[in-house]
Length: 319
Image (tube, rainbow, N blue to C red; front, side, top):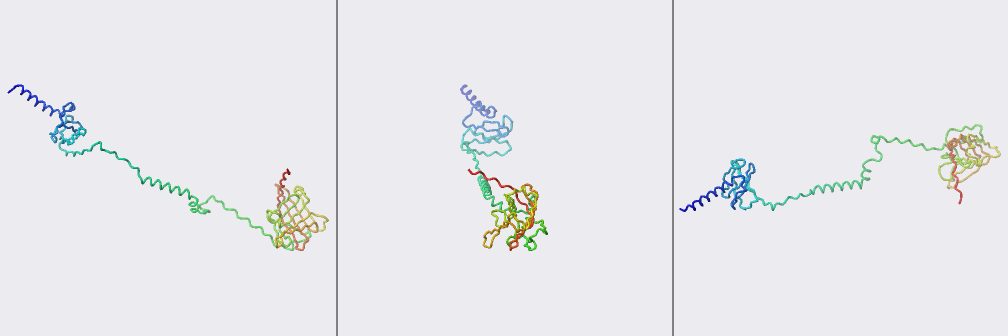
């Protein structure tokens, strides 16, 4: 037999064994890979190893951790991108599940629709409360809460009783000042047969006015004219007028008839009058009065007053 042929045969067998042995080495990246080889990883340490497809399922030793590893079956696709994993001897083999990475689609996170609807409902409820807040809160609580809930509420002051004129009495009509006693009560009496009580007293332009009502022209009352004398001149003075005086201050009565027409009557003499003025202070002129006129209706006034003595504002000059 040819000696050269024998050497070639021996060298071929040796190279084949070297290719098989290189699959078990750690530096497999330097070995020649045939088309029937595939790569797999050690399940213990992760070391990559090469294996011939014909040796799938055989037991090998990991060159790094020296564990006995069962090689997996060769992949059918022939794609070298997939790294298989061997199985430690004594454990059940892991089934091969291959999913192409090119077809993996990341899951998209969907925004929760329920949360959006909840936010919209809360916003609508808040807007409704804001729009109808007056009706909601107005009817929810009483306008006058009980005292237990409103501790800071002050007890209202009792209303002043209305002043009522006492019935006219003929015994108070006297044309004499000798037995006159003026009571400490609001001026009251009778004017032309009608009961009268003072609601406002004022002294302006030398005239003392005692009237019913507080505003507008005098329709029911008495006016005593002092010829333009100022309030300062009468402060603290007492005036007595008897029925036989030759001349006295003019007295005017005003009243309404049944038709509503205002009537007026002046007295310059033949009446009895006593006026006791107090001291003028803070634009107020207090006093006491007794007045009795000689009319058929027996008119008279009797009591105390506190007249407003503020001077009227001067009128602006005409342009």
